[in-house]
Length: 620
Image (cartoon, rainbow, N blue to C red; front, side, top):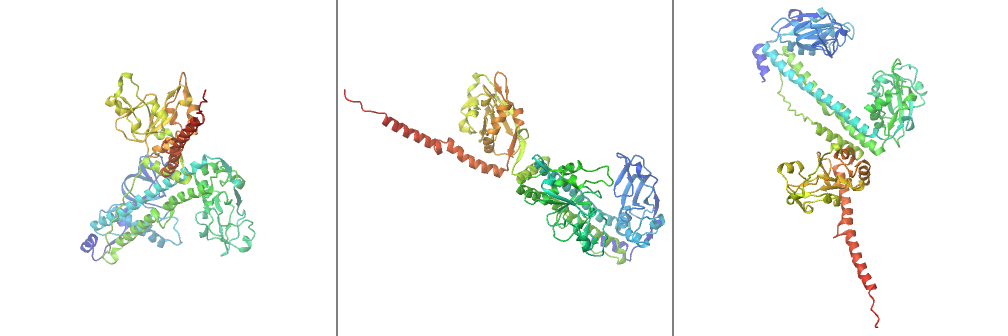
């Protein structure tokens, strides 16, 4: 038997006394109007809404339950302890009887007040309530020990649900961020008018004559659930529709009853009639994916495009059918669109599917809360409570900014195959060591200008020069695997910016002052991939066109930092390196490939040359 069962058996085994609110509490309204709210107000200001506003003046300083007198009857409850103000049509219930724990009363009101007030109503809904109605509500008053134990249990569920809801909100923001980031990637490409890749229609402009059955009829309010509509028209009326929806069509809201540009994709070939508040978009399936179109239009980029054509001064606000066709949209290859949709839908499911993910967990916790709430608050019927102890151990993984950035990069790489970043976000840049000639010849390994100029890859065995350095110089100018070196100055621009990548960790080592070291500050790049990237024609053109030239050509780390580097995934980088290494070996390794063959041909040539050009001298 649980502790609460013990308490009930000890203090109220025969049941619990119920008392009307008028014997336990003061009930009254406030004196404030809604327009008195102040954005940065000091005190809570309760209005007829779940939203709590702020105000700099307070009316009450107490512990109380707050409920609206109209609007949201039986749905909105607030608990407050301290200074606050309330709207003139909002009720405060302040308990004057110290036998009641106010939090206990708060949970009881949430559980049973709506049913009570509905029974008092003549109609199916309650538009407003009056003070006597609240005062007649009966509240059970078990001993305080029992009330507080119940409050502790129910508050735990409420807190967990609130945490999950906050996390869901964060997930939705994360979903929107990733969706817009992926869309933004494509917004850099050339855009086309929507009417060049999509047919655009709107629904009937006449309010139809509804029937009890027949063809489902949808309008802007049905955008979230096309097939849940409760409105129908006759088959004769539907026969007049020239354009009937089919799988792959996209409905978009175009007249405000919510947000213009909200979309849903038609997933059935069922007959469906639609009103003028919806536009029907029929994308060219060979060019444009329906779901990509939906996510594009709903993204920040799509909304900005739509907003250029929305008639904001019209009543109601709307966008004309022809203007929808003028909206610009990026259209990447279909396979890219489908990968993008796959990634976005993964987040969308987590955020919205009530069968899985956080919504399911929130719903389950809410049901669990309601179960225990009703169980605990109806003990008066039997004098006992049956429950099992449940404990949820949740761990949340708070991502750092770096983890979020890496996740974003991986998503873009997955969808588009690569991401483009400025080198300044990938490397720190530093100039090398300058010393007099007396310091050279002994000491630690020293990377020379010629080592960088002549080698795409550097290994410990390639570093033959030595220099004497202080510990501070070694710490400041140390060399590690993955460091990229660039020639910094030369007589001509063509000799500036040649690079080499260190592939070994060789202990203490420094580098020449006529070179720049780029030290990786991320793990997004393979060193071998960098070696090939900075030998490309594109990078060479960038260097020669951006280097400074006075008496000599020169290059700075700041200039290199502005170069936009294409970064595929690590796996793709490795594939590229594997291929290019073979060509590199064929072209440069004297023990294999073309250099060896060239050397052999040269020896063969020299042999036959000498043979052919060696003539026996005629006797004199």
